[in-house]
Image (tube, rainbow, N blue to C red):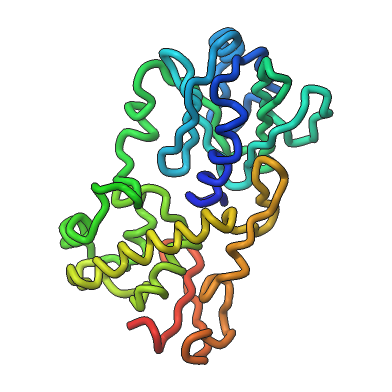
Length: 271
């Protein structure tokens, strides 16, 4: 599933090509995504100018006048830039055709993605309004994590995966950040003190920054808007490395399931 670095990489690749462009046409080949694509979307969008392309958690926000096109890539989706004469693939469900000749095309084999329209402030949409602070924002810090986890008896890794606590830190990067912070993912969130949360916040930001610079992680079929794979997976220290030696101490990496997600850690380095 594309996580924050992959979505941000997509945003950065698309923004110079779409911002300031006018929507020439909208093509919907299959409305049946996680939520149906609005039937009147072509009428709403055609002729509008895309003013900005922003990201909130794992959502992309194409701001256009008094409304916003909200796109989520789901489990397997990606947005590609193609030319108008590029024939669609089997899983190409949605095209945003621009007057400059470019087409933003959603390819989503599993159809868990979203293409929605929100008039007014997109952050008031029910899917976005309760999301927690962005990991790079001033609102996300050790004090916030410490205060919000005092009543959480569950594992700290599950807390990081809760979008109400922090926006967009997915499974891969939670594993990697916890290793860098030397925190065992099974540790109850309420048992972690302020000082350790300060380290964790720093390592979350460090991990996400490096992943964005690397173009994200290409597992399964992820590529960016230009069809290029990311390479942060080459830097994994724990994720998907079960039974392999820890790169720091040589102890075998362990795996388990927390919150129905695969979890990896070093039992010696992470306490």
